Image (tube, rainbow, N blue to C red):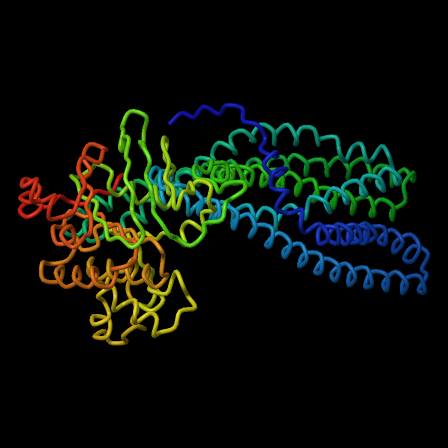
Length: 589
């Protein structure tokens, strides 16, 4: 496979943007810089002590100086160890906290995005960006950024002392440095390409695994195990190929420049040894110079490796900022209006909405829901019934017209305030891998057991829960896998009722129930929800007949409305349709 390694910009601008997450911890960073400066000065002192050991103690046979030098070595070593330990701990804590702020910012941003974004995004890719990419940034910050300061200081200090010891020998020591830098630059573009490719293939593999595990029942019942195994092998092979390419490129980008630098050691040995033989350089100065030269190679190689790590970390940062840059379609108003307790009506006034420019969903919708009414919204599949509920809680915003609660446009109300007033129970509700108690109390965790039981009774699930082994403390599987669809719906309804919203929207609340259970639940809903403003989106005749008022939605418009008895008597075809051929619920994509 031929790759076009186009020249990519060095992603250091991503680090400038990331500094906003680090800025609140500037005191800790300042402490790290000061500790790093002191640690570097201590490190620079060690090779010079070797010169004192040879020239002042060993050559002159001065036992007193020998003891002083030995004591100095011990002090420098112990102090250097202590300073490095404190510096590393402080820096790791600062980077961990700042990267948590970044991860939290991505998580909170995802909470504000509309369902439209998640409909076109892979779950595995999002998880990879939050977990793997930010984890890679944290690794880079923890392992490399701290080294930049200390290595640069040590490099400058070493060269300064080497020039002081012998300028010409210093020139021989650094003569191959330009070649090393050229070699690193050569591999930079390839490394960025393979790193980006690896991140994408890793997220593809994660998405495949998540989808396969969630669809495991379908895979088994469709006898598609071998086909899915082959797909898994293909994704894994793609990932391994990218991993090998990235690792080998990273190896050459780090090791080859370092190898070139190591060759300069031979030049220092030859030229420095000649100076010692000629008597123009003392043996102690030569040993000290060699110590600085060897230590000089280490920071240069470290900086080359750090440069490589910064490139790969920049790729990960770019993937994180791609998520943060997704615009929020439904923002909170800059100056939200208060929403008083619901007292009069909800009004849809000439509302229009479409998911894409050429696919209209709702056109010129106008109707109102009076306080305390029990309303039903019926209609064929795909006409936008569920979209009505999504617009009411502002998962999406209307594109024309307005929705008002007691005369206040919901776009002028804080989202938290609106969603406290209006609750939507979806046909396929989400349940957590937790107890029944925790799932019902999710929207109101401080609720007492008595309050939870009362909500369960109103939702028609209390008797079922009492029959479970651990009653309300019974664990349910991931996404409620141990429950039937109808049981999940009723737990979700109990969760909504516990919040005691002023306005309740139920999207096909009995679609998964058998006729006997549906009749019982319908009676309970009609009785328990009486007096609460409720909109039931349904194609079930029993719920339509239980409503106070019915709206019929067809082709994106309200075509008829009225009391159930009048409506079904006037339009017998509707009665026949609802009785013999129920219309399945629609969840717009």
